[in-house]
Length: 329
Image 1: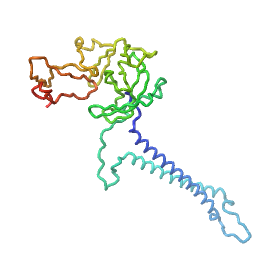
Image 2 (image 1 turned 60 degrees about the horizontal axis):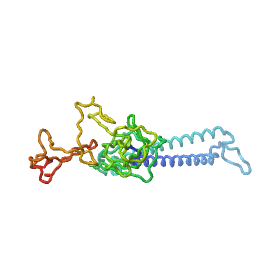
Image 3 (image 1 turned 180 degrees about the vertical axis):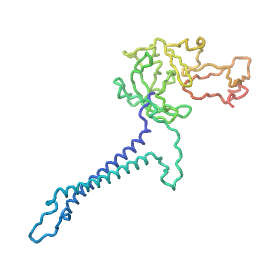
Image 4 (image 1 turned 180 degrees about the horizontal axis):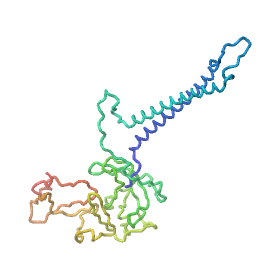
C-alpha cells in the first residue's frame, strides 16, 4: 500500500485557512480606515488654513489652494502612520493565530486557571514518508467505489482506496491493483513509505485480490485475467529475503546462494492462506516450551512465518491436553 494524503493535515489546513481569513479581514479594515482617514483629512483642510475666517460674500483661498504641496505632504504622513500601525497590528494577529493553532484543544499555557498541558501521544506524521502521487502517473486509474481498511494484531489501522497502475520491483513490472493509504493511526509507520504484501491470494482483500508477487509472476494462478501487454514478469514465482536491524534485501525469482550459510531447506506448508509449517519444538533461552504429554507419537503444531508481525505469539493454553504446561505462562 502506498502512502497518500491523510486526514491529519485537516487540522493544519483549517488553522491556516482561519489565519488567511483573519488576515484578509484585517487588510480590508486597514483599507477602510485609510479611506476614512483620507476623507477626514480632506474634510478638515480648512482648519489648516492660515486665516480660516471668511467675510460675508468673500471667499478666501484655503490652505490647499495656497500650499497644496504642504497639505499633500501632511496627508502622506498621516497615511504612513496609519499604515504602520495597521501593519504592526496585522503581524501581531498573525502570530497570535499561529500560536493558537499549534496549541492543543483542551489546554493552553497562557491560561493559568487550566492545568498544565500534557504531552501529546506519538502519532503518525505523513511528512516522514515519500508519498505516491497518482497525478504524476499517466497509467494510474482509480477503482471506482473500491476502498479498504486493514487492521493488525497490534490495533494499528490503515484505510484508503484501491488504484491500478504499473508496479515495478527490480527488473520486473506488471499492471496490478494496490491500496493507496489515506489514513493511519500508528506512529510505528513513521518513515515507512508503504507495505509490500507477499502473502497468499486466499488471504488477500476482495478489492485487492492479487498479491504483488503473483502479479509480477508469469503464472498468476488465474488472477487479474489476461496478462498486461506491457510487462516483464518473473518466470518463477519465488522470492527470498534477508534482513538486519538496519537494512534488508528482497530476492525475486529464487534465492542467492551467496547470501546463505547453507543450501535452502524446503518444508511443505500446512495452509493455503498463510506461510505455516509444523513445529515440534519451541525453545526460549534454552528452555523447551512444548512439553508434549504423549511422547510415543509425533507431535506438532502449525506455526505461521510472518515477516510483517512485530511480536512473537505463543499459545497460552494446554492445547487440548497435548502439553503438560502452557507454553506461554
